[in-house]
Every structure is written in C-alpha cells, then in structure tokens.
Length: 524
Ligand code: KIV
Ligand code: ZN
Image (cartoon, rainbow, N blue to C red; front, side):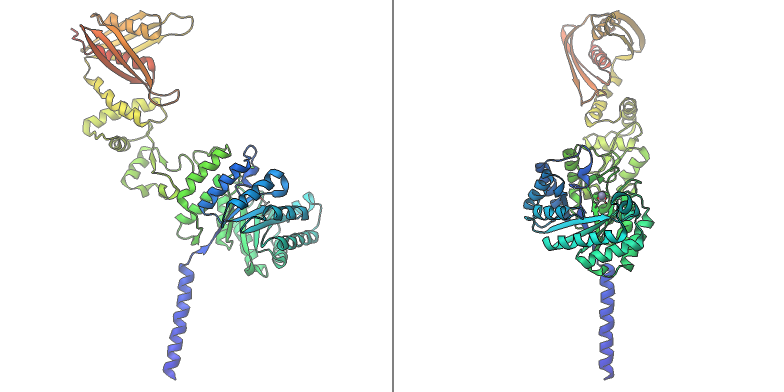
C-alpha cells in the first residue's frame, strides 16, 4: 500500500514538473493582424487599386500573417470590391472587414466577406470621454448598449467578431473593463485595445492590458489585441508592453504605415520577438520575406522607406564608420544584433565613405579579386580618401578605377594643377601645371572649348608635337557626382599612344588621359 502511494506521488510530481517545463519552454502563439490595407491605406496619397491590394494581400499571406484587415467595405464601392476580391484570393489567412457599430456597416461588411474561408468583422465604438461626449454626443451606458448590439448583429452574420474600443488609450480602465466584459458576453472573441491617438507610454499601456486581464470576467474566452499608433514614437514599445502583459494579437502595418505618424510596424515587433529570447512568443512570420514585402508595399503605395528605418531602411544593415566596419569584419555580432539574411537582406553593407578605414577598403578590394598589401594598400587608400572626400559613397567600378589609376605614379609626366575658365560668353582658357620628369612646367592657352584649351596648354609644355586622334568620355555609374572615365588615342612620333584618366571632374579626367598618353612619348 505504501509503495503504491509512493509511486502515485512520484507520477504526480513528474506530471507537475512536465507541465511547468512545457509552460516555460513553449512559446505562446502571438497572432499577427496586418492592417496595411486598411489603417495603412488611410495615408494620403497611398491609396491602392483592387489589383494592387490583391498583390499586397498575396504577399502578406506568403509572409505568414494570421489576419489581413482588407478594408472598410461600407466606406466606398472600391473598398467593398477589394475586400471581396481578397477573400477570393487568399486561402487560409483570415480576412477581416472594419465597421463602425452601425447595422448598415456590419451588413455590408458581412456581404463583402461572404467568399472568405475565414471571415472576421471588426466592429467598435469610442470609449474615451473625448469620443463619448465630443464625438458621439452620448453617455457611457448608451455606448455599451450600442457596442453589444453591434457585436450581436455581427456574430449572427460571420463566425468571428473582433471588437475595438476606439481611443482605449485615453479611456478610463474601470469603464473599459465594463465595455470589454459586455462585448465578450455578446460574442466577441478578440478585443482590440487601440491607442488611437498614440498617447500612451509603454508602462501605462502595459498596465492597461494587465488591468483588463485581471479584472474582466470571461477574459479567458477572448484574446486581447494591441493596436498602437506612433504619434510619440512609442508604437512598437507600447505593443510589446501589451504583449508582455497578456495581449496575444498585435495589429501592425508593413513599414509602420498608417494615419499621421503611422501604426506599429510589423517588422519591428516580429524582429524584436525573434531577436530577444526573453520574449517567448511564436509569430509564424517568414522573416526572410520581410524585406521583399516592405519593398513591394513601399513601391505600390509610393511611400519611400526612410533610410534609417529599423529593419527595412536602406541603412539598417549598413556600416560606415571605420571603427564599426573594422569590428564587423572581425565578427559581425560586434555591431549587428540581427543577421541580415534573417530578413531577406543579402549581407550587411560596409559602405565606403571618407570615414571608412583600410580594413573595409581591403575587404572590398578582396571581394573584387584584388589583394593589395603594405605600401600598395596605403597608396590606394590615399587615393581612395581623395576621391571619397568628393563623393558620398564609392561604387565597385570606382574602386577598380582607383587601382587602375595607380599607374599614374610611374608616369614621366604628371598633372599637378589645372585651372579652367569656361562658360557662355567667355573665351575658354586653361592653365596647366605639369611635372615633366621632375621639372615643374606650366602654360596657359585658349581653345574653342575647355578641353581644347587644356590640350593647347599641354602642347605648349610638351614641345614635341602630337595629335589627338580619338577621345571617349564615359560616366562610370549614374548621377551628377559620378566619376567620369576618359580614353584617348594620340598620334605622336609616328605611332598611336593610348591614355586613360578618371576623375569626378570630367575635364580633369580628360587632361589626365592626355597626360597619360603623352608620358609614353620619348620626351627629353
Ligand atoms: O486607431 C484606431 O482606433 C483604429 C480603429 C478603427 C481600430 O484604427
Ligand atoms: Zn488605427
């Protein structure tokens, strides 16, 4: 009997430990509700047509969001059509339509959602003193009545109803709890607590969610959802505070698009959860698709992503200072908390600017198949700094040009200084200073254009005659600050001689090319 009791006791203890272990190690499911096509699309100038909305919806489904808020069907025939078409397009992802707590809105939304495999109506009403009195000219009891009526009607038309308490961020918590309790009893299974005006601070918003979790009867039959706006730059922080305190759905948009300063951005919340192991939630998002989706939304909505935007900005994985570049080359984790590939970015970029160090320059030259060391690297680096001071950023072609330009060090004739006067109603004139086998020489000449004036000045210095036979100018990349390449062929001493020059100033590049060719003559 005693042994039997002991065994039962042991089994109970093992079962208990197992439950505790599973609770600690298992990540809670966090539902991702994307409202790019509804709240995001409310941004002036970002409106999409139905075909574009379908394209975004498909991308969101591939990304792995749980719910797509496809629009506000009663607001326009275009929105109605888009919601309907998205329902026909997506498969398992829930499609949601927004409504006010108004019968007509709810009936129209249900109609728009009729082809959805999983349909949800998102209905709600303002619960803050501002909304109750100043917007709706109503009172607290009447608001609860209207909310309950709307939820019941929606629940009769679609299988899933989400309720939003608009301006919950500025609503009294006790009253909010009463509203939430009433709508859960009426059949809402997801309760959205929007910080509509972006007013809350993280502790305050987190405490609001905790208060509802602890004080609403029936809260175990519903999921609380965060919906934060970014007016004070707190949207992501507030959403995370809500999640930590019990919310299990987060409402987000791609690139943080949305009214005014925008909504919580999907990529920030998802990557915070993926990066921080102390946030044990499972979002189900295919993170490698994040960048692709961000670019799609940005281009379809004509909304450029700011360069320093977290996760998806052009500079999110770009290192430009010498110290950081050196650190990243030693070990990426010195300066990066997210592996770029995790969000679909090929690799971190070591941008070559005037602040880059030799380590980064060498890294790029190695990548391009060159391995300069010692003195050679120092010389290339010196030339690099001169060019980098004139340009914001250097391209691969320009780096290769830097290596090629190294040849000038061995030229018997070198360009030292060039001054050109040119323009409309001026006589083009050039002053050229050359180093001819160690001797400083200079000349000034006119011409029928700035390059012709330069050639004439060079000819005055180099007394031996030459003829410019071919002249080819090319821009290396794009933009007005590009480096220009010039190839020339001169005819001198009864033979063709070739020269090359490159510079951000195309006239300087031309003179460098001629000087390069001239230095191949047998000058005395
Ligand atoms: O910010 C907000 O309150 C909203 C609701 C309509 C959900 O977007
Ligand atoms: Zn909103």
